[in-house]
Amino acid sequence: MAFERFKKFNVDDLIAKNPADPRDSSRMMVLNRKNHTIEHKIFRDLPTFLKKGDTIIMNKSKVFPAKIFAHKETGGKIEILLVRQLEDKFCWAVLLREYKPGTKLVFEDNLKGEVVGNTDNGEAIIKFNTDDILPWTHKHGLMPLPPYIEKARKHAGLSKSIETDKERYQTIYAQVEGSIAAPTAGFHFTQELLNKIKAMGVNIGYVTLHVGWGTFKPLKTEPTEHKMLAELAEITPEIADLINKTKASGGRLISVGTTSTRTIESFADETGRVSSGKKWTDLFIYQGYKFKAIDALITNFHFPDSTPLCMVSALAGEDFIYEAYTQAVAQKYRFYSFGDSMLIL
Image 1 (tube, rainbow, N blue to C red):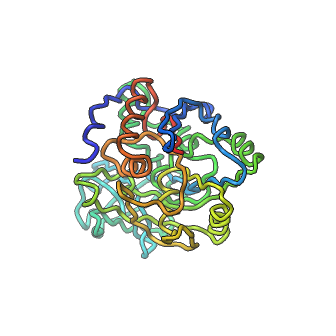
Image 2: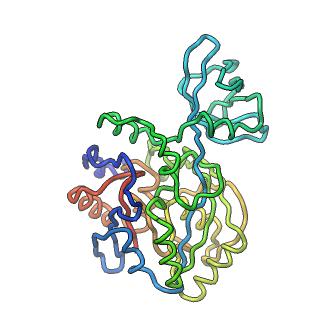
Image 3: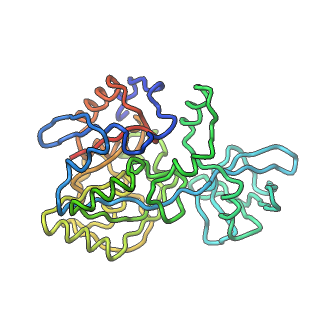
């Protein structure tokens, strides 16, 4: 099984329970693929690795409070994770542990739903009595924190969910609602840092990929047999033009996060030219993939059996990433969504 050796690392005590404060005070491990070197910096040092004419691309998708609760008619409480709205706007694909078609659900404030079937991905389908439940989720829903954060908080005697999660489990530049998990590589940016980067003559652009549960669906097989679940991605003509001009002028394209990378690479042709558009992408990047457009990547530290770890290993090489993770554990870097950062040059 791929990445089996990564499972030997015991990072339970290194799982970040909350983000760094301020955001850009997180640590940043810098991997240089050409020189095969590893440096240990702070994220606010990022500008020292940038140059005029570079372009940074970020995912501006916004997480919505997708974790909601209902009662069955029999009285039992049930936890539901909203995944995406379907073509019938009254219907949503959701994740829940046990369900039967026909199960009726009662929510607060007169919201009602009924399980009417399931998707090809094994998600349940709930039909609600309204075609716009987002206002309701903002009033009653919780941010869909990864279960391991809630588990780590509980183990430390902390509250599993806190009110500030609605701000902190979000990038500062999030704009378009649609994700059920945050593009966490962008957590480290502050407005002050973005202003400093822009002042250097570095371009900043935004794409959109609404993160679903497929991004974090663990590998149960070898990467060659794993199937990514499709997620909705979009690049505007202005951003496609910015990327292409950057590449043509010799600037570097620096992608913030694996979701931004999948978006860019999904719209790139074999020559590296990026087109604009909106589509569902199930691109899975793993060892052997030839990157068409991106030159560098900002990412976090990932689970051993995750698709993001496959991607960073495809970019930097599994052995180099293993060396980096060995140092990260030894130096007590903070891991996973709220954890520290890695810059791969």
